[in-house]
Amino acid sequence: MPCHNEAGAIAKVITDLRTAVPDLTIYVYDNASTDGTDDVARAAGACVRYEALKGKGNVVRRAMADLDADVYLLIDGDDTYDAAAAPAMIEALLTGPYDQVTGVRTQLTDSAYRAGHELGNKTFNSVVSRIFGYPVNDMLSGYRVFSRRFVKSFPAVSTEFEIETELTVHAINARLPQAEVAVGFKDRAEGTESKLRTYHDGIRILTMIVKLVRLERPMAVHAAFAGVLFALGIVLGIPVVVDYVQTGLVPRLPTAVLASSLILLSVLALMIGIILGGLRTVRQENIRIAYLALSAPGAQR
Image (cartoon, rainbow, N blue to C red; front, side, top):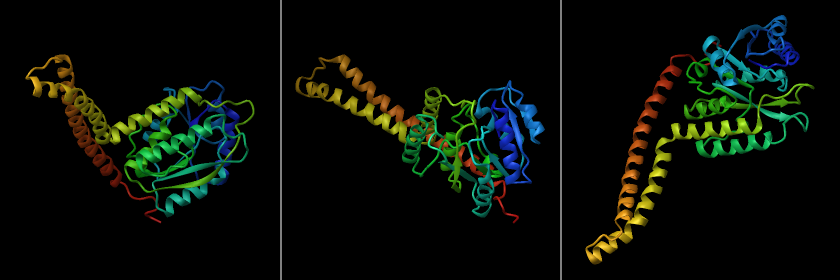
């Protein structure tokens, strides 16, 4: 559970989780807080660990590497998510069985979402759903439950709030079984402030989507780029060819060179796409092997 600076909110989240799932082992990762969050979390009964590299992605990456469990529950420490939904999410994961259960936020108050955040989330949901061909209803939710085989096959390269995007796309591309459960979402505690910066983190999330499209759909991206270059080369080259057929001369040599270069670049772009597509296949196979090395959640039930 990534740790924010709101010590009081952390204590309440720990208490609510303990009430909802009494046998849950709760870890709080202190991410360079300065308000005594670690002491408050420890006093509330959580195991406290530290991650010096700032950013939610760094915290999640560290926690997934350090901790070994059959079921992992990830929740933000700002007390905006309904901790009482945890048993239903865990049960859904085990009975599916699924590898990821995402808590889809349902506002309990009209002001739960900050201005612009709800629109941005819906936009990103639509973009990812369309590009990757899988319906996504709350891509940026910070409330999720994972199986052990999901966590141990997840590359986790994000550093900040784009981690949720990476989690979502990983599950889609690896074709892992997943489900969504509606969870309550409320206002932050008075006097606290979200660490999510609307424009800065929105750009980072969009950049992550573009990066994942390039990595996970390399043939489509490079084929489109190659098509544009080829079309430009043809448009510029046809008049040169016509002149040559009619006169036997190439009066527009620079245009001829440019057209030829564009055609060659289009071929090169296509070849790069083919190579990257092969590398993607190898990467997906390695992820699959790591995934299959572990048993499904609830297999011993």
